[in-house]
Length: 209
Image (tube, rainbow, N blue to C red; front, side, top):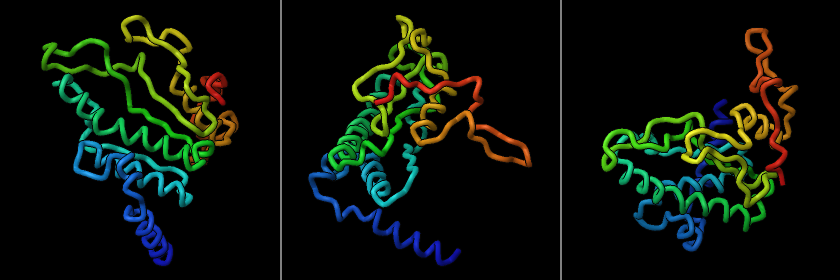
């Protein structure tokens, strides 16, 4: 265990060393100066470096739940977008230009969506949670580019067209990873447990490349 930990630390030192990157690359990610995108841009660039070194799963988060905009939406939402939009686009662009996007699946999402109406005062209020209609996006890894799948009602409250359940989404991601979700299970206390209930999910072939 000690030897494994030492090797991991040596590998991490190299992966986290952004001095190996060009200024143009750092600028693309928005992590060259002290602008709003520096924190997340640095994380996205490290994510690319980890994937290059064979790390299979990388998860990026922002501290303090900045998307949970229950108040001051007009200020907070544009602020968090300025922190994340540029780095997220740079990650996809960088993976593509390095020939990695065909094999790497990028998933952008959150725990839940937001209601299309203001919570409280229109000028200072925010938006409450909404589990009936919300968006995520996928890039690379076998996903067809440049398409939108599904739609909400006219006010953005509830999914009404090509509805994707969480189980459909999970089944599709597992399929892209090379797993048959109908056969996949694990044992817990001697009992078969499944990530996705087979009768409650389908693979979304319409979004495949």
